[in-house]
Image: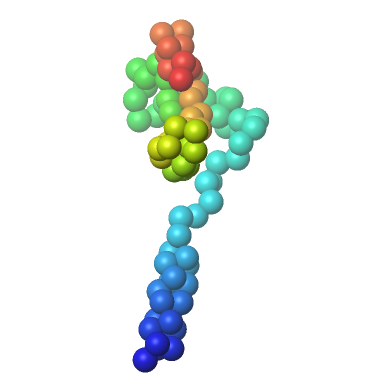
Length: 92
């Protein structure tokens, strides 16, 4: 009975790993030529800025010196500023 339970758990974790999130579809570093050439956003031509990509991840760490858990959040945002009024979108 124990072997059946172990096999079930291994299969459960394997299926869970198979449906994990895909890698990000954006490349870090230099923007694409298409992003550089964009002058207006097609869905909203009055937009001052466009968020091209927004990704975040959280990690829970234990801080021994403070005896508590700490949540660290990292965020990667790619913003295209289209007009002077959208420059505030560049502050994160």
